[in-house]
Image 1 (cartoon, one colour):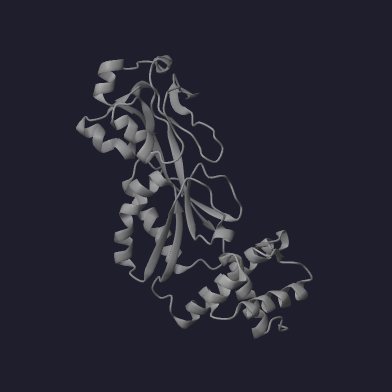
Image 2: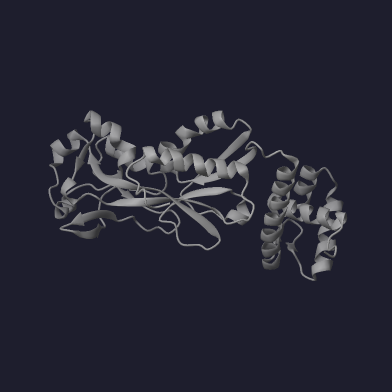
Length: 313
């Protein structure tokens, strides 16, 4: 194989990736332990070799050009694979190690994944975990995440998708609220109730409530005086717990209160709907051992969640 890269060029690629991630030459220089001028010269060498501008520069800031972003995504993946290949050859990956960066929706993080992390760390003490709790979609390449969990994940040929569970939905309220306002018996009764809404911050779209009616799936855009725009755990469920109205949420969030009687499930004749949660990670040739270990761990633990179709992997 003909040699394509020398040590200087490889070093320039690393500095370019650092500059892209840190948002500037000075910040990249501090991380790398070199001077900003050295970073600038390295970027210049790359731009001269490629014949394109990788960064748009102003007196106050730099940002990746379209070509620069594309080049960064490919270089970041290549450098990651080099690191993993080196660890594998050197025997450093006989046990999972390194930093695992995961992105999880807030509700799923609080009630499903975060409680499991101490057990995972006891199994694999050399793995450090960075958790991003958010309901927004992330860019694996640009933001450097190893794995994400999402609701209703869209098909993507660059990602491997593993089904975790179909999380059952319930409509809940307090006994006090139902004593004051009555218990809804049909979907039409929702028009006479305070129905706490959850609005997607990215689109401003309110989430419809999902029901089964006489064997047909039905969506209802219920109305009410409360709209939650981000954290469904601290928002809609907390309001419902304090008697503000009806709220549709995941059963796994409120199963303790339902068992105790502090919350009551209503419209059970229209129940049975769920939303799927999916684990996603990049379809790379070299999957880090720490990621493989965490994926296997979650797939093992999902058996204790309900209900997940065992035929789906």
